[in-house]
Image 1 (tube, rainbow, N blue to C red):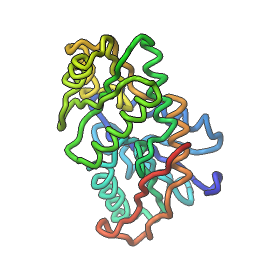
Image 2: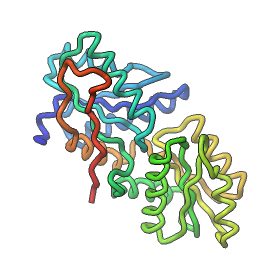
Image 3: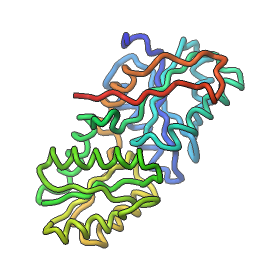
Length: 266
């Protein structure tokens, strides 16, 4: 893709009742804009916070943008990515949006490959709180989707390879093991100083639950969410550059193909 042809980029977060989550999304939008001067980067939310995606797209069209790319700020391709986002785009079309919109892949693994910037961001967040750990739990929100959980497990494996210590996934909800159970399992296997890496983009209820579970089980430290990490900003741009062609303006929700599995970043 010609980098100058993006028109505008919308970072689409799920949204949270915790105001820190929206603030983190806006900070990431600023980091992406700083990494590529001249790019119009705007945050949008599917729930809880505003502005909503449809509002942002309508504003971009009114401002004369020829097209936009929506980048889902999600670490797995589960319900919000496969159902919520296409539904919102279909609603925007029904409301009269005619500007072409391309949809990029989520920020997590694709095709069995864990993006290098994602691993780097996780590693740097851990390094900011501790260097004396001998095992790590990758603390994630949780999902009932087995394919999405497989990508979390792949990230845990990649992080283990990068750090040179055992790493297991743990979940705050909807899946097993819990973060605390994963910490306990690593301690039972001989881990004396187990740390928790945060597979979260922003703080909120589930991150707090994961952190509390880790500490209650004996974790020595819990990393902060990925937030506006420089590596994450570069990953957003990689997903932007790999976004597929837009769906035709008349596409219905059942026909909407605007999905890309992602691109590995070496």
